Amino acid sequence: MDQSQNISNQADQAVGQAQGSNTAQSAKESCQEAGQQMKAKAQEAADAVKNRVGAQK
Image (cartoon, rainbow, N blue to C red; front, side, top):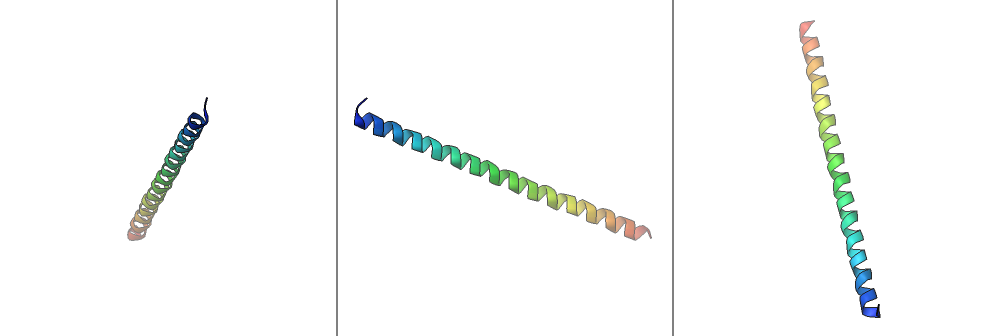
């Protein structure tokens, strides 16, 4: 393998690693966003129950 092929292979590896890192970061952010949405929905449900229980007193 000559030097230009070696450099090309290293560049390809770097691109692949960067793409993998971007994909992992995107997945992490998606999971965090989904978690925040679930937390907000759970809080809304808890507030609705509190309001309902309070209205029955």
